Length: 83
Image (cartoon, rainbow, N blue to C red; front, side, top):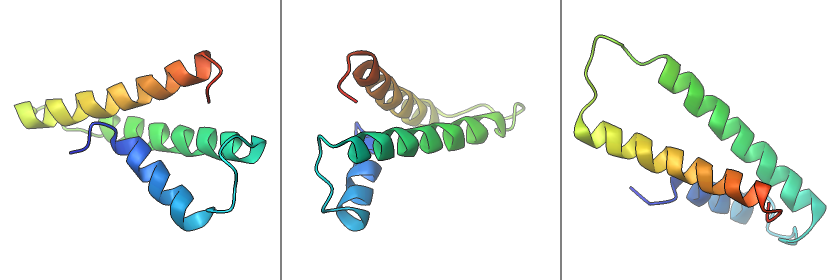
């Protein structure tokens, strides 16, 4: 698994769906924020649906930690005015 799985999905989305949009444009920023908001909503929905009776494996926990860290990096970018 990539160390930035959500960003990798975003990069693919940009490449396929909007290659002509400039990275520093308002449209790019707004699309990126909407993409991450949707991804975060889906992630939260998946987490809430996990079976509380089943213990996650170490690999499951590592995957979740990587995804949470990727979302945190994006949030840090927003707070610093980079996103």
